[in-house]
Image 1 (cartoon, rainbow over the protein chains, first blue to last red):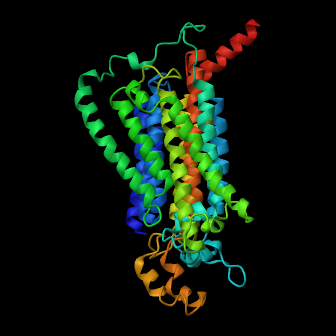
Image 2: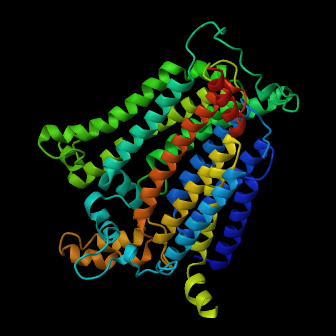
Image 3: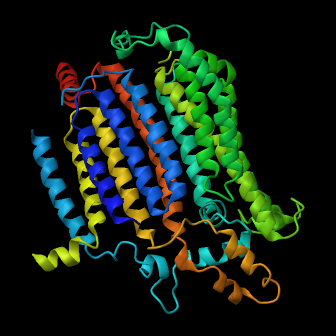
Length: 81
Length: 267
Length: 149
């Protein structure tokens, strides 16, 4: 419950979410989505929710990103918006 | 353009309503909020009961694992069924079982033939390092499953790490080598055996005359000294079932997604 | 303006940011053209909702919801002689974070990744049938198919 830490991570979180949806290269969008997942894991570990942070780090930031990258490499890599 | 205008209006209205509702929440970090301490009088919050009585009922220090596997074990069982169903639907959507590849129109060229993505030069270093790292990851994952009672961890986290070790070998080496070791028949069988273990622990108390998923009734079968230790050991058994299912389905989803259903080739 | 900031924003500043992230994700599901961007937006929306629930269970000065050895070894000698009343003094609920939102959100995370997997499988089938994953081109091709028939 450290307020300064919370504010810094939350600002990075909003920036990562907006950038992940704005880049044209889908592989970069998937990587920034992975960064978003790890920042959320850090936020939960700081709030005291360690089991949730563990699960988010493996499932949300790990497996989710790998599945999106696997799909991108089987479809197109560039997007038009 | 119409989609963007409609989206902006919808998001603005929803955002305004949510922000107005958020101002009524209790202060962030308040230990006396209704979720944490109840509203006084005769209705305490459920988490107060869980924090005070978990060790007396089940002898397990990790409150989250105890609630997940014992007090709310019904939800966890159906969550495992949901994971299994997702694996089955991906199998049904993507899997191509015919031998010949001449099925209708030819597929559009996938992006992995793009020359800007190459990896064949580095396969020796990366492949060998990942093969050394994968058994260590699996040992740590088994530790996480087994120590879910005393430290953060449990069935889901350990199961996903086990699946991730197979995904690591498939990504760094080739999917075909991994499928030789952990083929389709094996992982489908493991997934269903995992959920059968969970349901088995649920059905066994019915034989003795108690409720479904009432682990305390298994103290005679597991030869423990009291009902609390029976609950603790059944929690471990149930977490093992969950870990088996989650491991198999995570690898199954990756294998089907990365090869477009053919289980040949790969990333 | 000043009392508005004092009472409404400052004590709940992080809830405001969660709502902003939720709206970013929701906007992207409706307005973006690319199917993968829609799925990433959906996932961002989901994790923001999980953030909201887990931060309802935070207590100031509380530790993780794993009972530590001191509280357990203090209370175990009195287990047989006294009753549950003595036990309640040893484990102070204000020292531990609320474990119930953590449990519910654990389920939500894993179910979220399972549905993401199914959505990605459907995206691959759409690419196989239409050759593109941009929503407007897919809709144009479907309209052209219907016009031919």
